[in-house]
Figure (cartoon, rainbow, N blue to C red):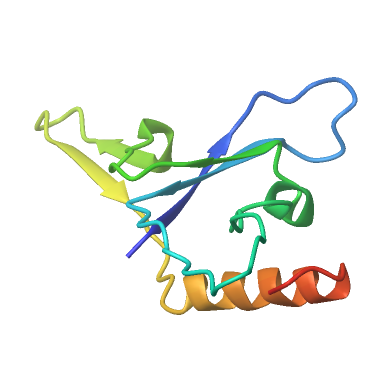
Length: 113
């Protein structure tokens, strides 16, 4: 199942809120079969997603991409042990929700879902 991560970017002087990039990894592309006579362009599942969520960009990878900034390092100087905690969201149903939104947006735009 695809994972969703957020990579925070440095703030600029004109930023109302901290900028970020949405990173989707472990993504498996869906295959679409066209019927006879259909000439629709392939659907870009992530088209317009950055604008919808306020991200600067959306990066999509088939491979696993670990962002070190998303880990919290706790260290205790007394014993020298280091503990790293990684928080990952439960995205059960995320793909279905995104695909439903994409289909709805394409329908409103007069395109085929």
